[in-house]
Image (cartoon, rainbow over all chains, first blue to last red; front, side, top):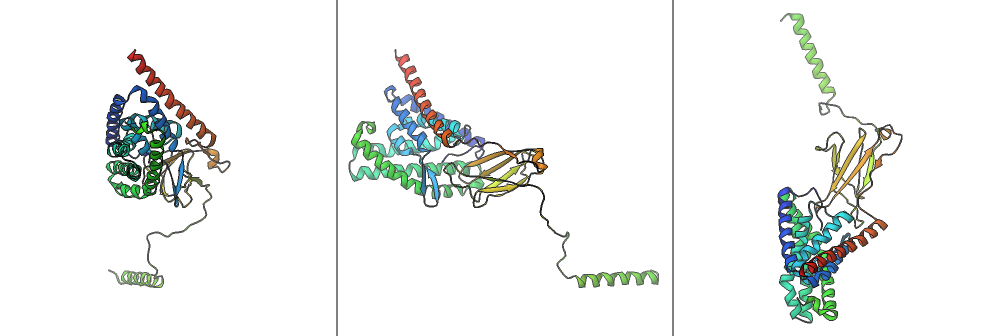
Length: 199
Length: 161
């Protein structure tokens, strides 16, 4: 999911930084001091999830857990993922520093979107309805991030127009897996720590 | 035209026509040939952090003389390998990229001794950590996240007081 250095045009890189900057500013403004530890925990979860390799059919990929992080953190998903992606770029050589803004936008925005679409419904509902919303959140977060990465690549180089299709096809199994993982995590949190999903 | 000269021209024309008729293979501007090269090639293997090989992907080699135009381009093989034969000592760069925004870049220090066939080229260590270094960097990353969180928390509490 991480886009490497050297693929994107300066305009796309700048747009990514602007979007990431605005999202992070709003996220920090809305972040209450007593929720900072929660942001650190989920930022760490995202940071470590990228090290978990998942073999799906002939291909292998790594987890992202964008949806669980987004559902719990809301707007704070931006500063959480910016920090995690910065450390991934420096310590693990995933992505890069120039492309950090685009990668943050590409992964935090789907997290925010699934929060706005599904978080309230998941809180309200119980049983199968909540499970369906949780699965849909996990599935759509990966699909949105994959489509976003494909769009960033196509905007930089129209010759990569096929990238969107390639991205979506390649990430479909991961989307299904993350839908299932989000479902399990949401069910677990609703039983053990419902207050985490409460706001 | 004198008669003797005309006869010579006709004879030359007939000789050319006879030669062309005898060798009726398609005519090329240049002949082709091959031989086993005595130059040593360099072969690198590329893989993702997941361990999966970077198979059949676009690869470009840049020589120390020209950073802009590729010295050689092609695709990695099924096992993620790409080989090239450097023609001069110096720092060579090999870039492999896929259509999903992943890019691997290797720098190889080709020494004059390698060119003379005396030693192997020194491939620069990849920056991507593996094994224990990867585990230590992961722990360091989590530690840094909590340190940043503590710093932000303390600053906010300080401001509130």
